[in-house]
Image 1 (cartoon, helix red, strand yellow):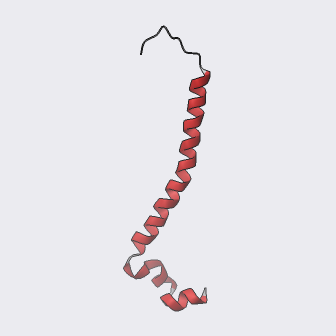
Image 2: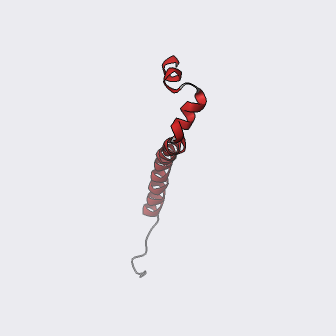
Image 3: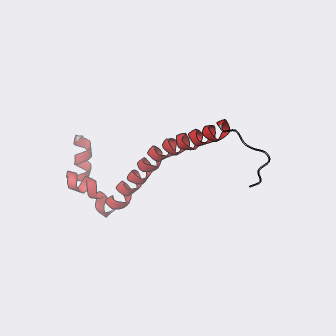
Length: 63
């Protein structure tokens, strides 16, 4: 990590990213959130589809 601090000078400069820290770290946070949310949504959709397919459907009913 010496190379990191040599480039930025201090940890606070690293986290602020010369004024772009909110954009940079916000982008990382949004990406992480979406990457964690995607598998959960896919599993939920799959579970609901399997439950729907397992239920008997009455063909006489009209929607």
